[in-house]
Length: 441
Image (cartoon, rainbow, N blue to C red; front, side):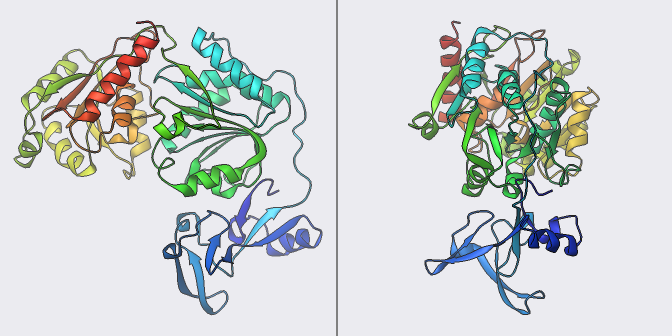
């Protein structure tokens, strides 16, 4: 069944004869993938209307110069002669159910307030922004709302911009909803083509859904690439039913989100364990760029890492780019054991992150790819070159939020190693201090 999907012919795992038979029975609908519109074009799958993002190629299917969409080509080529298919037949009726949530934890007062707002919104077309500090326990806030949606037979989506977060969330959600069919969708996922009442997916995967979900959660709504790519916002809107309940989650909403008249905003300024957010310490590191060209690392950074090793403490060292990472890691590996680096295009990315979780890697040098969604109980955090332009206020707040997340180790350390203060650094520190003040610290 293609329930709620909008797919290319080659994405459907059934013989063409079977698909055609369902089409004749009225169960499958064919759609033009690219529509001519106002002397331009419109891609039905990704919403692209920019003429420069369409191109022509010699097409083997129609044996002509065929227009295709370059914007969503990573999800499979959509062209003028390529139909998109949707299911028009009976949909899955998950039915009303008794309580499915199996969770014995308790919520803080801030979590309870946000949770009650979400529960009250289920079944209505309301939109709520949960503005919660890093480590507030955003996932737990969702549990009761998801449970109510499932009790009412609704389809549930948790979407996030990054696959790391999908991998982090999936086992946690399956553990507390053991009797619910849960899908985990990302590039290369084994769950593609399956049906599930609760879907955890990267936002790119939403391009394959249409008018399907009743209860939608967009996690880290301000994160790249979701916040920068209109295609992903189009995909999220298309995947949801018109009357869907939508919950946005983030610790760092941009000004546009904060001022949106359509959003009800619920703030949680303190962490679930009741301790304040660790405040970053700006630390002078000298001209780190110049030293790196000489294959040297500032002594302050080496000394700090040496102290972490002596304390047997796991450590994140965030760097501004893959170029810096590739230069820095070999230098540090000559000084420290159990040290490795990771970035978005690293083919061993998942394995390295898991080794870090298992404490097989003690010191992990990383780009901003791990600024969100990865939790390690007792971790120290530092930013190498915090003055670089890539480290925005939002990125620095999220990076700082990796520290002190555990109730057993709530007072983590976060260092901004820099060659001069930036506005983003100072704004991030002010942001964290303000949240601590709102939280009563």
